[in-house]
Image 1 (cartoon, rainbow, N blue to C red):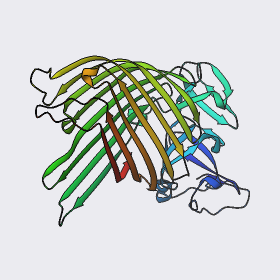
Image 2 (image 1 turned 90 degrees about the vertical axis):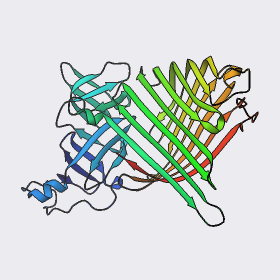
Image 3 (image 1 turned 45 degrees about the horizontal axis):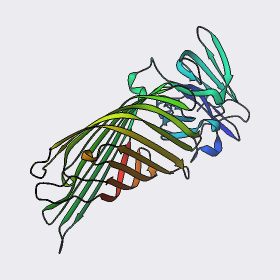
Image 4 (image 1 turned 90 degrees about the horizontal axis):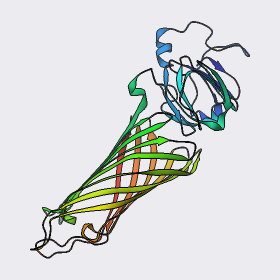
Length: 365
């Protein structure tokens, strides 16, 4: 911390220089430093312990959010509108709507963003789509989370439920690469009643403030009880941000694809593999209910041939409550649906829908 006033606190960052943050956005009290009223705090030479305690690092500025880690403020995701000024210590990559990515020293002050590089650019803050520390370290582009839910029951009934979800993302002002994994396993009295895995990957290229190109979408899915040994889907498409503002995001994306499904077992005379063109539609909605409580809804829809099931969707509703730094409490409801499941060799038709409710702990990094 280098300066403190009655309504704001300024910090020096090894990566992003000086950040000026309204005091109302800071929980707790900053580390006290003796000062004369009206003077600059930290003008004296702090000892090594104090210096270590005040280190913090900006991860990225994107989608109107400032993400940084701090020993004083813990991990924060602030609305960019609540950060009055940013004075980066080193050059960064900056992306504006409708412009190519620019590398240079960035100054964010009030409603103006200035970039000092091969050419000097000064544009309104609302045209800013992202700032990332490219050229610093590759790891600065990455973020992720891991969530685990475990339920055990014994006595008259022995039951075990395990759900695992993970996300790994690489974000720059112009691109997003994201991997999502979800697995569920459940057993009652030694008999499986759930065993499925889903892995999704996507690559998005931001075209402007609203439109983006999705040149690659991949999904791998398996569910033994739904008679799906594995299902692979590849697609391309375009997307559009319906809402993209502080605390509220809603996007839709879609496009054509191709799908291959291998069934566990089939009736005599039936093919055990289905190849089909597919239409892939997706929507993602995220909203900040409070500073610590967030809601998200992700729905993926696939349209395919009758042999492959005709129609399916995967919907996940999640409430995420931040307990403390890097630790969340997650409540999620999952609904998987297949309109025309394949009859197996025992002439059993799997259920159309699977519903799951999970409560677990999540770790962010």
